[in-house]
Length: 80
Image 1 (cartoon, rainbow, N blue to C red):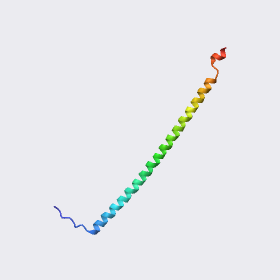
Image 2: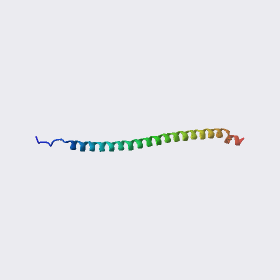
Image 3: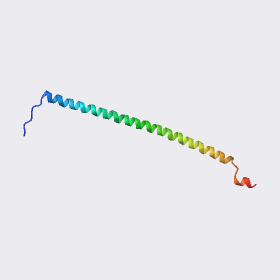
């Protein structure tokens, strides 16, 4: 077994500083990822709203077209 150097307070302080720096870096990474997810969630919500509005619009146009078609004269009406 090899001999290890004794653990000093200076060594522990350096390790603690390194761990705190790593923790701060991880916290920044989590904040960035959270912002990305929130942006995607907002985009998804807006996209769903737009799709629903488009669906309603298409339905209204379809209803209007059916009403117009029911009022339009047919070819058999023109022959009489």
